Image (tube, rainbow, N blue to C red; front, side, top):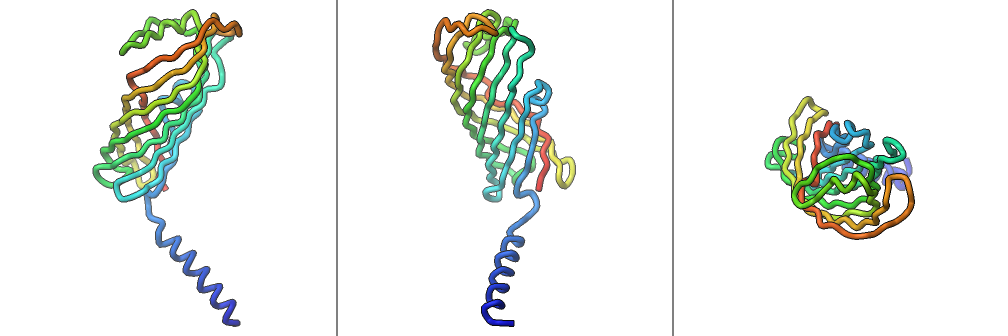
Length: 197
């Protein structure tokens, strides 16, 4: 074998061997949030190990359809989150800090809910369309179901600023105002089914 070819094979072997030697069980995962699934919101998450007890979780969801012409519940949301695991990553207790970015189009939703300074009953007569930005903290616990499957529970609390336009009904385009709202309350609720690689 020619020396040049042998050198290339040696480099390739070191590269492939080095890459394989760094692959360990539970370095990354994909997941779906059963809470979002129950509301017909398409969602997916991915999590990657950064260090022995640190991971980066990125989840996103999309609800692009309406119940009927008057009721709107459209939105997309992304939540990147840095997590610290008290044991090994992907196992047992963790805390996290997450960011929030998304867009929404809500209206025609009949309710009488008011909590933590936010009156959701205004969604009954008007449609609100805009963007949300914020951050929060969370606590969670991961139950190991098998070598590759976990069930993860998580709840988060934080702040979001909602920048929106107001329309007078769910399906019409007549704009009647605009505004902003400072939301403080739950920012994350998850029951994740997780597949570990």
